[in-house]
Image (cartoon, rainbow, N blue to C red; front, side):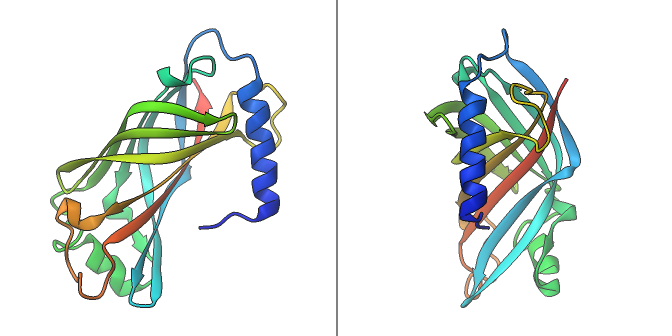
Length: 194
């Protein structure tokens, strides 16, 4: 999923202001707005892209704006709610040859390290578990205040995590002669400070 150049400039400006603010005295814990949060994914089906989304079931987010490395993210996805852009792909994806939603109804991500890249971006290392198999992953992360919030108001934020996996690393090898191994992930979570 691409963001327009105009939106990228707006987001970068907002992030610069956000990360330049004097932070909270202690790490702040945030709750997830489930209805406004989801994971987008994309993989190739021959020359065409299959896109889709998966609902975020829960998230535990703690952000320390003064010491970003002390921040933590844990996200749980609802595999049974996944939908793909092609109806047959939805059924195949949730079936036993790919995600096996009946046996493994959740995908989880738990951060292990957070590193600031510049005033507007970070990288989050962590472990992702799919089909009961856990592997390391690194997400590019960005965070911004929600539209309409006042400068300095860190109570309502949107966090975006972008990365990719190889589905074969998790045993999700069904239809590998037709569907690409790499799956791009785009997690967007709207959060509110507790």
